[in-house]
Length: 432
RNA sequence: GUGGAUAUAGCUCAGUUGGUGGUAGCGCCAGGUUGUGGCCCUGGAGGUCGUGGGUUCGAGUCCCACUAUUCACCCCA
Image (cartoon, rainbow, N blue to C red; front, side, top):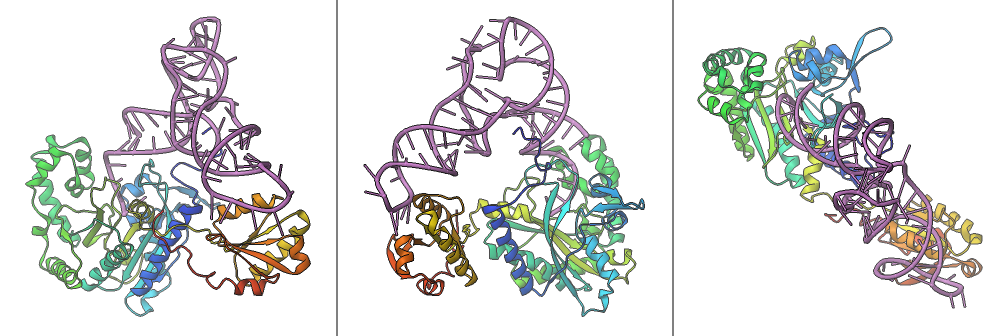
């Protein structure tokens, strides 16, 4: 590729079949969210940097080194949103949504930006679908939120995705556990891998995540976080688990599951495809009972998740679960020679006015070439206009799949009537 | 931020021990007699071989730098 005008690394153009796949997935998402009583919210592409510093957490990698920040003309720092929860929480407080019927149930499908090195499953600009369930401390809220993601994946037919859940407790429990864990690890500190040594100082919980065999061995004897949870957190987590059981949603309790954003409390969860790489996690979320308050709102419990649409689409494409792409042109109007091109264009316009997707030649091609073009468009019918047709007022209509040819009056209404099946059958075949 | 790989037509790619830029497929355009698509055949358009240096009589090929892309780590969705 020698052209210097390319889109920026980690961003991509989407069109044709690829765009169709994305839009189809977004439709499924919107339908599912409607069924679960979530309404859509759009927040701005950028916010005051402070929103993310406060919301996501000053010590997270996202805030420390992955944000696209810039200044407005007044010198105020702005940032392209690296995730959506902080912005939604900010909007909740700003618009006094606590006066809305509780709980407030919102979902979003939005682009996010993180300045990371792109690789498969990770883009600089990526798209997240997520839901936020705000106002309820009930474990049923946890289960409801998880059920949205679960049901969506079921509807899409995604195979081999596992739900992992854990509880990292309230801040008090977490603090207690953090101390116990640090105490345990410190005796083996020298045996940790270099990144874990870093993690130890920054966020010791993340050492639990390490896939390095030697670290895993050290960690295998580490105290469990569930043992550090107080009565309230333990009770909540048990209730979440039984609520999931009641919904018939299978899960694995993963004691080592921790999440990288500061705002999580109590329940955390991830949806992980079978055999996924480290970029494979398709969705992740958890409770954030203190976030609304940190934006100046009343203390308000909430829980949500984010799902990577790009990762989801990739899995669906791989598993061949997205209906085929059909550009959707129904009729091609061909003309024999340039003298009839005007009539063809006029008929095409009349058909379009009737809501029939129609095309005609715009390249000055021969009739034969026009037919080839019609074939490539995958149109269902071709109408052919020549000298005779104009004289007689009757056109030939060719069924492109059977090759059969019939006649009709040169009139958009009559032509449309001959094609009763014309508004159906698009995008119905899975595969390809 | 760290490490590896790659860079030839719109796409997927051949290109020998350095010897005239080209293979195959796809795609695009035009033809294959006079008004009709899919299959087949023929022809055509399109590339400063990522950029800049170096070695050499001669570099797509070897060396260096840069850039871009990509994969992995880190982190996350």
